[in-house]
Length: 335
Image 1 (spheres, helix red, strand yellow):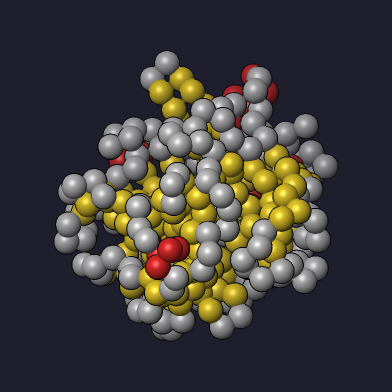
Image 2: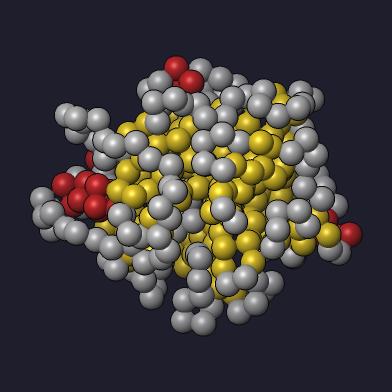
């Protein structure tokens, strides 16, 4: 209900070492930036032109991640990286080598990874070049040896994001069907699989808002971070795009999906929760982009740390809580 204040609970593990800064006094928006952004600069890897749209997870006594590093020849690939505090990262010099069927592991390009832990494995999804963009999938247990699975879909598709557990006995994934270029359209769909190989039962989740009611997401939308399970539903962060006289502008929004039927939307924010404002978000290889790919959560406190790409050049960090986001959706609902 509009204006209703709720207290929600994240379903998951405690993460006492989650990166965190308190909300600045007087701030009237639900997400706030880390004051030392960007946390990863464009040359913080041996041959990088840019490092952005990357994903991180808790690992051992710190954190691990899969990072998009575009090289100085502007070759797009994925690199493992490690951190003790989630703020200072050491990214490997060499890209991930995937083991598996050579017909599947043959590389054209790889970018925009998501990572999650499910049972005893860390699963990686990414935009994979296979005669056009599709969803690559793989897994690791140690971020050293990676095994590639079959591509989830035929081209053309981007932004494949797995749910962190089975739902009604099925693996589920959000994605955004696309085309070969800078897709001028895009809605979010949910697909199901019994085995992470064969995907079907595709269901439309939500689409663009092609009017003045919520124009920031009027051109295309796409899944962002791995869905966060709460007692209210699956909390998702997604990107929304408007086409302006100066080109595309990417912002971040929030929505709440049904726990058992995650193609059904329970709530969605009319307002964006984070958009390009700072210099590092507005100026870069692709200006005016904030693009979410990962969110760390602490179930004990409800804290959420969002890792996002900035202007397709560097990596930023922002903070919120589950209550901040759900209450913001209640205050500014998309009716």
